[in-house]
Image: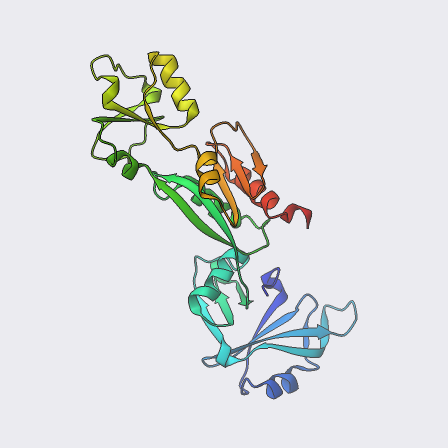
Length: 289
């Protein structure tokens, strides 16, 4: 349970003990703002949460006619984190996992207060390469989860291919990557296909290309020869490894937007936050809700 918006939540400082009987007795009949659906109660270091039903009416303040206890102090934690957006379901569900309480009340960004109760996240595999580190697609997915459109709590599960490790494992003197990445530090002589280096004095047997079929076609077009290739095509790797959960990856064959194949959605190599957001909505069928 996560309120749709923090305006649904009212915070009350009280002097009575936060027991079920006391909360019910002291809350029934009280007036609350018409949009209020939940009440957070605080007494010293004790916190509790209740859901309320109000009498019918169009007034600005309405009386409480029913109280449902959501959590009492023994199962409730309170945290303050000025970086956390309490309107982000994924971030709020993560707090429950970290704190280990059934209910967590959060004072977050802009001093907004809300809570999360017994919420679990849906795992979403993000398949990408490093460097860069952190990987681009993981950061795009994190940003997409904070836009406000994805109301389902999502847990990002990175599944990464380390290009440095792949390169270090090769016995050839040179390794070539599709494009220049400043943070590649593989301890090898590194070449970049997009720079079309002169290979005439290096020897083809001394070079391993780390890329995909498009990289291979580009190489053979430039040099009229076919090198040793380590294929890091996300589609092939995902197909070989299999994915039980939903998965998002990148593919250089996609120009814009996304393409879905079963449990896997692919975005372009130059994907934006908006592209990834739409991909998540489609993959989890949230655009149908």
